[in-house]
Length: 111
Image 1 (cartoon, one colour):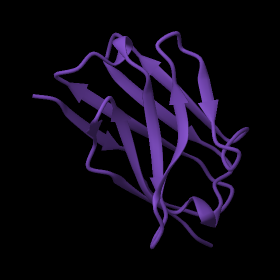
Image 2: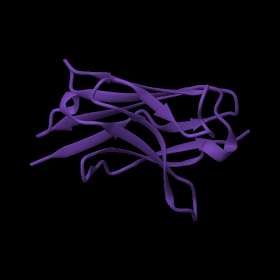
Image 3: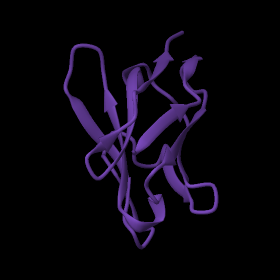
Image 4: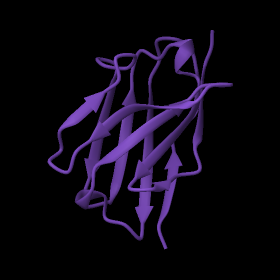
């Protein structure tokens, strides 16, 4: 059984940073492309960052230059370093591999 568990969310002020992590059981992150998604209040879930099997990252225009995705194959985790956070980054963040999703974790950015 595959389980993905996100951690590291919270409430911060604009310009601050957070680091999200996603721990996996039942699936080997290093064998698949992995992604992070963002769902703002009242909006659809959208892809913000991904990493291929070959460790090539890609980002949406809204987070490029501010967010960094990484993978730890030893710990079987993926992370999302979020810098210079903006109010529009507020919402739930989900990690994803294949058709498996975490439960989501809340990030709130407000002054």
